[in-house]
Length: 207
Image (cartoon, rainbow, N blue to C red; front, top):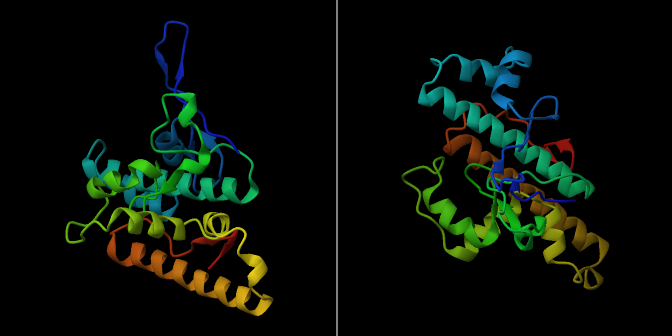
């Protein structure tokens, strides 16, 4: 599992080579909006986006939601398999910040943000409803980790399993799954993600 920093050429000019994950075919593309239009125009979410005038803010917003959703599911597969490259909202500029474990998803846009900057991002996230107050710093990270279940939750609780029998461990897994379902339901119902399908992956399977 890796994370690529900002790339620069010999003239120290930034190289824009960041690829985005397609939500449907799961492949990576430089021009993800063009890919959706050319290859997936019949999909419901793409049709919603393309129904708005070209260049309009609504069209851009819907395509951005779809881009973030594709990257989110790509990152879940990377975290589960421990292979591949994590796609983050903003690539680190220095190598000492290129640690995949330092990034968590925003509970509103699903983009992966450095955990130290997550609370600040959540406060001004464009997909955050206006009537919702920003939780405290620690709560923001706790809520974010639920979207990574079981990868991050298991890592944070590593070492505690010896004191838990199989039955209790099974109950904890069921409780965590129900909690994740609640978070996804909240996203679907309250965040106006009109293009977000009802199916959300859980360890590679749908809930």
